[in-house]
Length: 328
Image 1 (cartoon, rainbow, N blue to C red):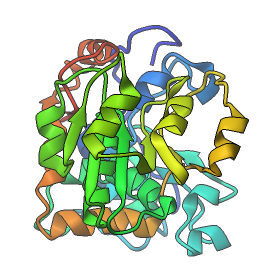
Image 2 (tube, rainbow, N blue to C red):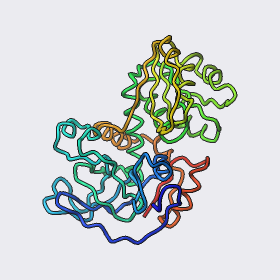
Image 3 (tube, rainbow, N blue to C red):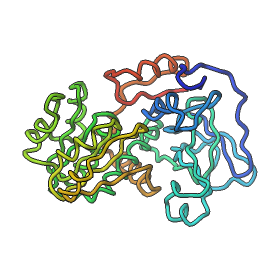
């Protein structure tokens, strides 16, 4: 990273050396996440020049620091990008996001990255490194679905046809939702959304509320906001039924206005969802290990490190890409 508002650049850095209790992973695949784009634009995330981005990655363990246990060189692993101590009550409960030492693991936009064994999930032989790099967004989506209280037979509306929104559609159908409509302002992800499990796709920026209702056959029981744009919470309030649920998964660092009376008059639940549990990460891996083909449809391209700066800038604009992976 060269600084806020500046394109990424290739650089040659010293090979990382693992400290005590650490290990080095040779990165096989790393996903470009929408939050990576935000990190280079918004000071809220605390990123700065010299940082190496990349938190959706998998690779091979190639070096161990003194006293490192639980993994061996040669292991293929997916890295849980939630830095944590591994020993506190939150970590032992499988909730590393609430560890006092929590931080977001980066470094995946590189040939090698340092991490810790408690953040590594070994990949079975049926799961590729490409699969290992999409476990993180699958786990993020699963966490939101788990928090929502979704019940079999529910009508679900997903706002946003990016990787998280499409993964929410996948999990919602697996959890028994009978109607899952993905809504976006452009149609290019429609085929992918339907292949991921959605039962409908709504595109009508002039009448988003009506378009969703027509596709769902009524108001949604649960609305997942997976974009992070001001105004979408208010839209979701109009789209959900009385006593329904809105789940916020989209990252929005800009202020938004909420009409609390409109929410109160419908007695809605507004739930925020951040990160995931270790159990949800493992459940996402289990789905891939069991042969679920739908999540693999998220990947629309694989590029080299040299290609990354230009492709990264291209992704700032709306493209037909979904999840682009880097193969260092």
